[in-house]
Image 1 (spheres, rainbow, N blue to C red):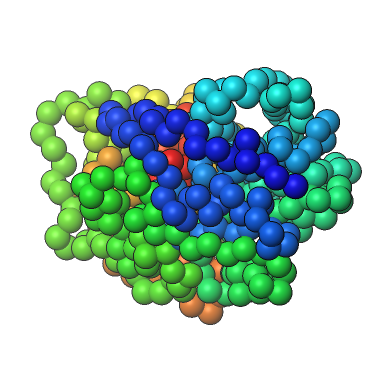
Image 2 (cartoon, helix red, strand yellow):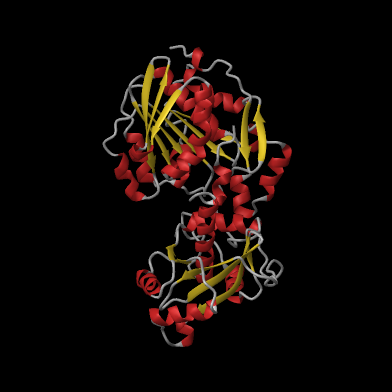
Length: 438
């Protein structure tokens, strides 16, 4: 079946605004063209897998190809669009892709309340259902759907049960599977079961680098290369499936990088809190000045070392002491600390349950530290002490830090995730690099 009318040379001059800059896409790279046309060629691939560096152009080209394929081959069918969350799916893919499709003549109508996108083109109409694959319970959301194809954006961040359930829903004849992701560890199930077995699974595997994205100037490439170090550099810049090892924040020197508390007034205050009874409790006091959040003071209590546990009410009073009359915008607390959250609310504090995703939180924290959106002050000795010994646990088959001396690291992560969510409307700042690139 010929589909040349869907992959003819479309006008390629497209403006995209990113962080105050405008880049123009004048052409697709050879690898992006492979993504756009793989389903038209005689090789009988059942799936496509694109992995590699951040900002390498794989997401946008795959999304465009997916819609071209769906509208060329099918009519009145259902498809799945999957991201880690529906919000991230819209942000990473649809926000840029839908205006482009509309510019090509596609009619796209989204019903957000139903997480449904209806697309029409040249007399054909198909439905695209949006799914979030955040945790193991997400697999139940996609059960019962019959799909003609599914696109999974950021596949490596989704649980295996969700991905396998999404694949199982594709029972329509001619259906195909579309995966893209940035690398994780080499023991990750997707790397082991799909990338290493791509030929066996009849999947076309394409590895992307930043050079495969013609929209990136050398200056922007250099910026992204400088944004990462260690494990994250090897994964997100070199595109390697490599194990996390060594210090988690290996770029940060606890002796060199902390700053003195800046003079002058702060425009806002917040607190991040990791609650502990048998384990240590750690509170960080954050003040904003000139757009930067400084961890100016901290509270750290180790009940084992002190030989006495504290009650929720005592911790509330310790928080008051730390604040010293300052009025915080919010107190960001470990969501599992239900009794402490209630005690804080009864005491009149505005409480926000933290996002406790460890892997995302570490990436976000690293990003904000490197960009100086958050700064640790020399007065926060326990936080700096933990920073120096916070290491990856190489005994596990997934990214996880050692659960040792990590309580200030947890409250630091809570604050970073809250700030990133605020900056990006609920989206962690470290994943800006995971957005499509042309």
